Length: 254
Image (cartoon, rainbow, N blue to C red; front, side, top):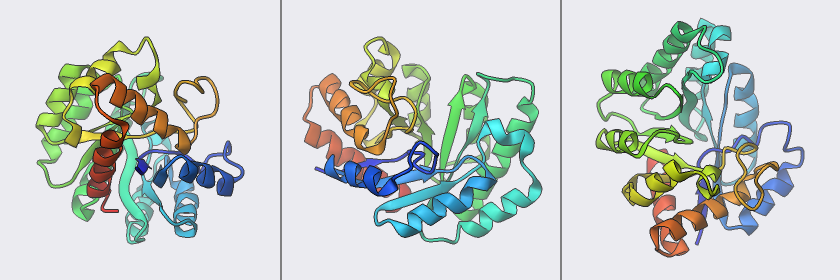
């Protein structure tokens, strides 16, 4: 069975030998990888990687932590680059109140621009939501009504919030945290959400799953995420692999 890592920052400096990283992923059954960008300076690199390697795609977006640096011309560049066939989404973008709440207004403005752009260009939206659940949800539901797929990346909310997102048609992406013994909230989500709304990701190089926790994460390790979810749900690995791969292909048009 093949797998898809829907969120992997393999453009970052931790991955010096991309040939090796991608070959290792393939040896683990990972047939496709999506690289999200975080600012305008990363657009060119993620597109270059996606153009070079078979089965690699990318998303273009401005991360909330970069909202203060975003300029109007950045959104023009974003829209222009979306014509590339390997650009399958806009993101990651959203709201993050964990590190710094001093520029929430700027975060919301930058997020809104990308919501509207995704709607206009009919691109899937990859959402970063950290300790900003209500504001993220409100902005998404007030400005979108099912026109495009929405992926809640590295989902960190409650099961109840996940269920509210699913009612609106959003997809829930789970990563390495689901393998952590103390991640009870994520375990509940993995157990109860509808499988047709589930996606797998690594968020590499961050959040490596067991047995690599604390080390550099990489796309190959999405296999451990799939295995843990299969264990939690009491179903086969093959079923999780098949369903999440089909979901990713539909969501991203790949």
